[in-house]
Length: 211
Length: 211
DNA sequence: TAGATTGTTAATCGATTAACAATC
DNA sequence: TAGATTGTTAATCGATTAACAATC
Image 1 (cartoon, protein in one colour):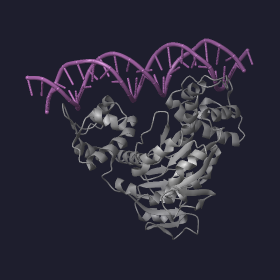
Image 2 (cartoon, helix red, strand yellow):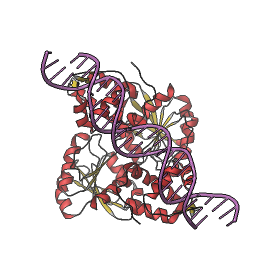
Image 3 (cartoon, chains in turn yellow, green, purple, red):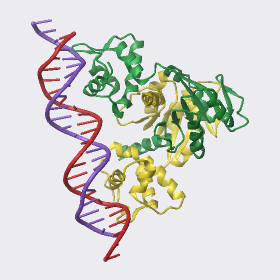
Image 4 (cartoon, chains in turn cyan, red, purple, orange):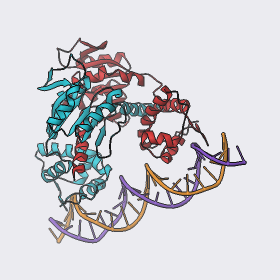
């Protein structure tokens, strides 16, 4: 069943999109979809989709298409979305609060255990039952509770320092919203959300389209 | 000077990162940098960097390196960051407010003119001098004022509808934070920030690293 | 001049697309 | 069976890396 011999990153990048569309099809009680139809939804070519899905099991049937239920479950499992993850947010500013309030992530098996900040005014407040604590307590907190993911929502000048604290506390993955390339050992997973770069790209294409 | 014969998308994706590092070097008053050194900062190979930069002018000097000031200015201009852009946010929830409050975007020549929402409690409030108005007023607002960029921060079920309103109001680019692939004519620029996909990738690599 | 580093071409690598036999 | 669609190989395309002559 598993053919997981190091699937390339470009394939992995596409998986969450497959997952999202399959989820909607499951909700709509659709049973089967062909690579061509899935291509229309995702914008990928049918050929690319067949190549991608073949990296994993074989849930396709010739002359028929793909079983949506099975494919959905399988991709969910490949992405690891059938497990539970604990996270903390560092930085209770607007962005940190927005993420804490975003309940949709729950569906990815994702629970935010605590938010840390330096601002005394915020400390001991709660966001959706999630407590905000003093950043000085993060060390002892991480010793007490196994946390998988640290979400960095602090200004960029503090991002590297926060990273160190997280790594010391045995956090294995960092979701970084600070506009900086944080440094970490190679066994630490880093996923950057660089909104400024995204916006800069948008502006580039906006100008290009004017020509 | 311009060799802008359709630069490939992978190169464009890298430009904002060059820009960010060059900006810091400018601040530090560094004059020159070699492709090798810039490679250490960005994580790209020196060879790739030389190829990339050659798509544009020639600000390199053999035996010497790249003039940082010039290169910075040029990339700024290529990205279109030396112009002014007007934007509106649709959706004054946590995410919309976080973006409205994020002053760092100002440096990209980016001004948020108005926020629209359906919630009567929010309407007529202000975020950093930016007024929140009723979504029903968006049509007349967009007729009055030329807006370049619409920022979608509404729930996914409303995203497509909002898109239509923006396009009707002559908005040319959409920065989409809703977890859905919105549909628009091909002349409309769409830049997606799919946080759920980003998180799903993070979780995948987190699991993979456990093996 | 000698040393360094770019600009640029050629070689390699990887990803996408096309094609079609296998098979449901 | 006939029609449809996958699975998979081969062909194409594009991006990256290597190499080195040009030149500051």
